[in-house]
Image 1 (cartoon, rainbow, N blue to C red):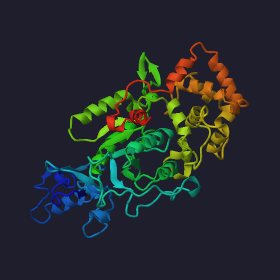
Image 2: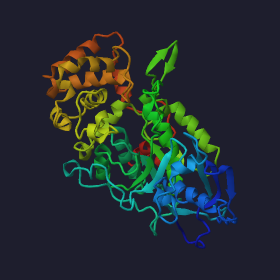
Image 3: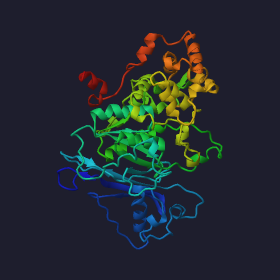
Image 4: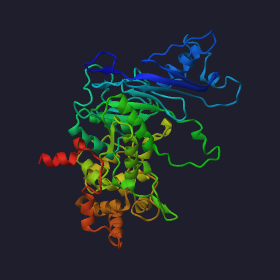
Length: 484
């Protein structure tokens, strides 16, 4: 961690408390630090070394290798032996640390590259900048054909970084899809010192994220996370699988990362349709992506506001429809060869992960549909590369009709029904789509509906809709108006 011009060391985050719960012979022990320092005194065998073993460096990097736990790099002191110290068959234990910044009138933190983690399942096991000191790269670096190279290395932790307050320093969670790409391009104009944020299994890399991230040229801040193995056994154990509020989880991790890296805001890419319910059950709306909704954003902002000094949190696309996003993305030709929103690109098992669009899933169908009004047909066919464009596949008609409101909306991050209907009508008018039989058939069906979107509604969808929480310095719409 690097501070500005003040007395060295006075502005760094310091450990204030640490605790060990149900590990080794500790039932629930808390240690208090004085001015960031801790002294342990006791007889041999009283647990001094053990406390340090499970706190440093395990809490900071989440690595449970026995050679990391043993100060002599031996292999006998395993985390399993720490947990099952009393002969139990299974057990949970927790270790934690608390850090705080000393109060100061001119406190400012420039940049940070600490590790963070916990063995509380499930939890992030590491927070790092992209300089991961030789971390393994799963499946290698992105293919050269899909981008100019790896994302630029983060300068987090290096001297000379610009302290917060001198300019906007946002962090943008990045998934490589059209929403986050549009957010990046809108925000970076106002804040050149932007950084991307990616959460994944430690060391894992997904080409569908890495390739477009490389195109941005921005630094990448990474947080590692592990999934509790028991969660992966839910079907075997007879539990129902629910939808994980992954955006809410990533939002919380992102706030921590932003604090550690001296960022002033976490900028999400959740658009207007994310607030639309997936279905109604017993008269109540059910939104499977609730943590992307406006109501979640407002509630999470209220939670953060209770603690002064935390980074801002808002979605750059809150009042934008997917139709608007599609139009904006169509203009960003530098990303067309690298982005990929297909579900198969993010399979946890690398052996089942595709390095191209599958052309069959709901996400592939939706992306094709939402971009069809704005991209030349030939360019969109080139996007899907090795597979046929979904709109050229008559067998996918049922999936498109579901997107258009025939049946239950897919439990996927796809647009709202009226957005999809507007996209079909607009795309069908393009001269280069006149020969697309499936598209013309779908457009005729939509046009015949009594609730088909009118021209005024379609035009309205291409402008801001509803409210947003974007603060003045990040209001790209106002900045665009100001510059003509």
